[in-house]
Image (cartoon, rainbow, N blue to C red; front, top):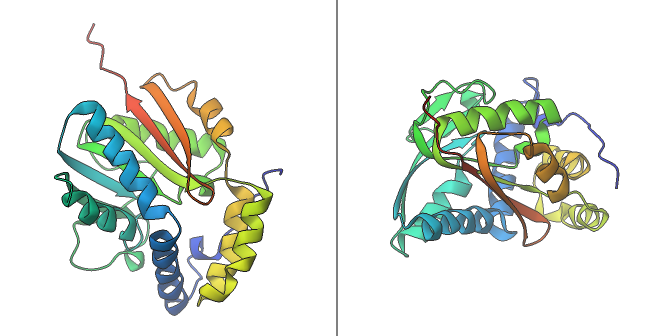
Length: 227
């Protein structure tokens, strides 16, 4: 299935606020029901197991309502793993009040090096072209201390069929149109591995398939070499 890039309505500043809200709530439900939250939770569990750590600061990029990391953090807390979350999005209207949050460009993160243990994103990577994804990963590796976590869709014909089948679950027309566009422009795990191969700041990459055509990518930060 060839990758096809079609602009998504939610990315546009012209999307009416009421449709933005309905679409973000659709995304929250989809992430809870169909593997989005589980994918992020499992990646954090993997990092905890490999590092032996039980507490992480996490920057969620292109966060929207921040449902994925917040629900994952509640589930992880029951297992003794605590996550301190900061949300970042390009639009203030996408963020909910009452959360530590920043409005900024994901490709130019406004933080010093090594500001967070983890930098995470959910359903963001497919919005970026390969050169933009490279810039995001470079910024995320700069800002993190431990690893970058990418939770995204896998492009596959069957996945496209599932999106059409799931239309009745979506309350927003924007969600239906953008859902199709998202699958068509998503990457495959093999494509992600190829893209990451040239990033020297990453010492190791793990890209694994998850439930219902999700993939979880963990890019471990390479130690800083002092000359």
